[in-house]
Length: 326
Image 1 (cartoon, rainbow, N blue to C red):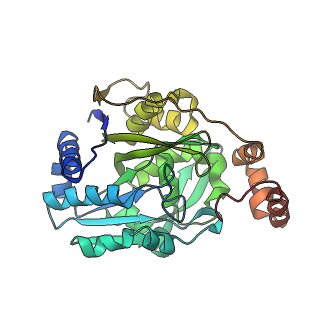
Image 2: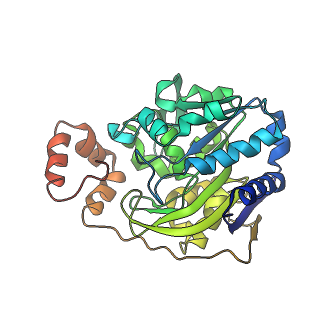
């Protein structure tokens, strides 16, 4: 199957957004796939405990997507969810409630909002750089859904350069200490995409995050919309639209290489002539560099986050910088 990436200006009113979503679903051949599916899963990006421009996916955006699904049929089960905040940073149950995602279950039939850290899971073996790694994943995504959908926001990321549809999958890991495997993230993302059956991406580009991310940065008004039947193709195209070279972004490069178009060719891109392109720039701060080094080192990850010294090291760091999540 060929990869298609649709890039447009995000519609501004309710009826136009309905038409935009319906049109994208039709062009991606999503409708026929959804008709055959027993259940699907939607993964928004909820990196912060409340809505924050350019940081978190809007509930309204996901709501429009679900509304389009219900116009196709009312029987396919739709799950929406996210795992607990990494490093036990915040409660996902409270986040889903405060951002009003929990209301979806009463708004539409056969919709369920789930905390991926509070449902059954099992360990799967994924290929690491030198050995297999045991990674715990939700059974819902491994066995119950026919396919999954990533709904990211366009933002820079001080550890991975960009966070788009692929990086968004990391939040599916139910382990709040999933950071223990950050050093293998580039190699694992494409495998997670395959294991959890992520096949479509819908970008909520009402706002983006520039300068620094994934939480602290400069929110920018964009009004972007993108949709694709390939997460790797989506991120390859969007990274270029954001002024970044996808070949220099490890997890995107690895995912493209693992897909049917390993050199990035063979991807059809349909771009609206009115789409407002914008160049993003990652600007790491002083304290990002120690974290960036640790992000790529198994031993330093253990020292900074898992050892007996981790509490003292974080206490010292936060004497000089603000906590990203209060």
